[in-house]
Image 1 (cartoon, helix red, strand yellow):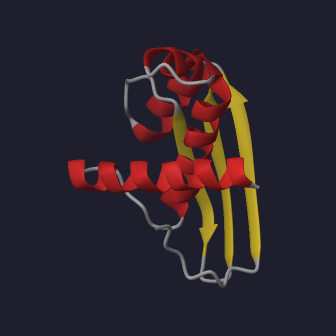
Image 2 (tube, rainbow, N blue to C red):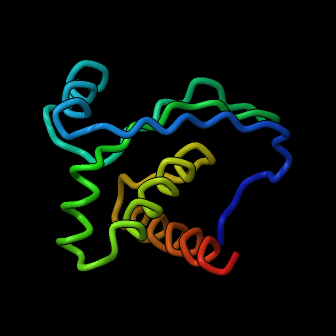
Length: 116
């Protein structure tokens, strides 16, 4: 189940779609990680009333992941977009247990999208 206080009155989320090269450069410059990734979330302001963030997504990596996991590109893109939001509301994915919890929450977000 997704957990959040549910009382936030404003959200300002900027999704920036880019390629592998651009996101890799950001990963090295700002996080000192010399790896490719599908998403980087930069929380600009997170309070009990407001969330503001920039979420960078590599379209190249999303396409590759969709092919690797044999899922539709749109579904993989929704998963990654949800992943960024989940980080903002307190989910982590450092441990195996956290990754499992994150995956369940991502699936719930995707399934909610498809039932709207």
